[in-house]
Length: 149
Image (tube, rainbow, N blue to C red; front, side, top):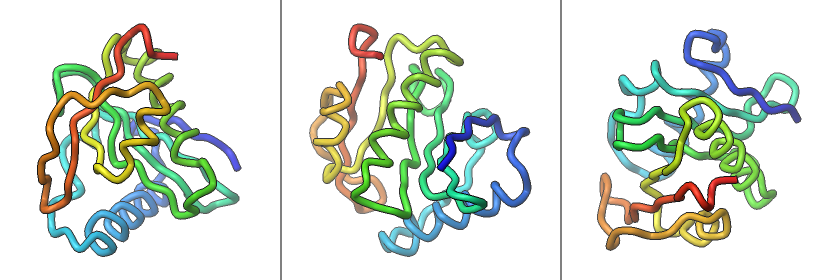
């Protein structure tokens, strides 16, 4: 298993295809949520993923400040091999990328409520009441400079 950190222009055609296929399989089909997954933010994001051979098995994107939020953010976190700690490990890498590439002093996320505990273990704090995003319960969370690794 190997970690990759790439800007959109550095992704291969096959990586883009795998990433979009995974995101649609999880966020649209599995979660039965009709929304536009592919958006304008992909072009300015850093895409982090673990590959096992040629297969992407975990993915997230890191967005710069003033895109989705005023601060850098992490989103689209998913794993095809669940309950193995890949999501937590990848989010830690996403935090490092937000800090190193975007100089993050604050990282903001909108997390599905059921994974709140994982983000809390990584230092994130809930800063909103629960809300529905495309029919799925979410909360806004933040990681402040003193908590950034």
